[in-house]
Length: 89
Image (cartoon, rainbow, N blue to C red):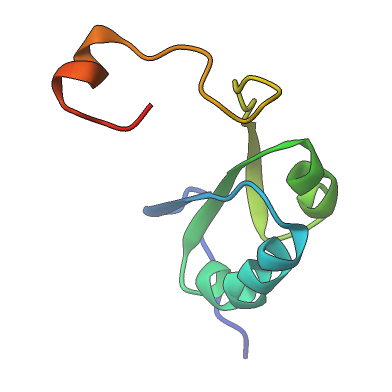
């Protein structure tokens, strides 16, 4: 007999993954187990990742991630607070 998962899960998991689609596919291997354990699984990912996950039945919500970087790969903006904390630009 399969265990019923409540429609209002008590546990939520947010996975933030941008970049390589291959790594994203590896992430999906554990989703059925997490879903059976009662997790609602949300993904924050870029456009390519959303294309991969849009029909995955174990993903509740896809949150867009828009990479705000300059075409040369550098950050568009570094705040004064980031500078004070000595974070890399």
